[in-house]
Length: 234
Image (cartoon, rainbow, N blue to C red; front, side):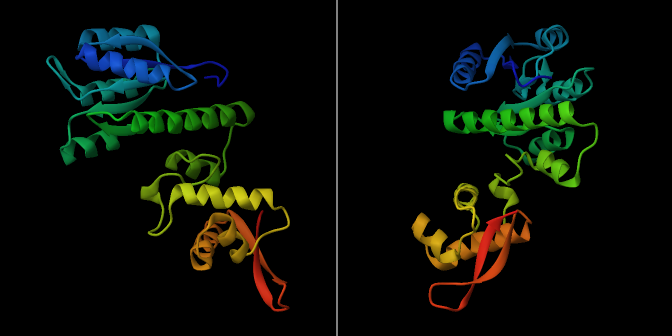
């Protein structure tokens, strides 16, 4: 697996019109290429074995198979293949089964491009991180394992479902960006002004990062001569 080539994608979808839309979507996201489109179980099984894609976009409903059964077969292939389900199946038991088998993401039709793009970008970050870890070392730390399991980007939680109430992933990334630019540390008041939010909101994000051990804090004397907490990247 190398991060210097495009991620190869196999589309498994019996509606060729939808498959073509997915192919066009893939073309709009840098770092991916479609290597095949399969419309049946026989084609899908053959393409998996011959093409050995990195990622499979898979529906649940087919005239000749259940996509979840193909998902199980994909996980048994000698080469590791990840799967994103793209389906009209909304039944909780199907979603739960897909997650338990090890699906990377689950997108419900009709597909919105922005949601599709988000899934591919998250996968690319995960794929690249995994490739870098495999290249540089044979063992990993707990933090690196956590990042892979959560499908984080640069070790930061980006999935809203993994964050506590009141913490937005995009805002969290912005806060981290400010901390990295200001190397001597920042106060909650400084972050609040930079982002146009209240000091309470800024402090909530900063304290969350402290709890996640992403940053550290120390007391320093502010402009009014009283101690205030200064936050900085570790």
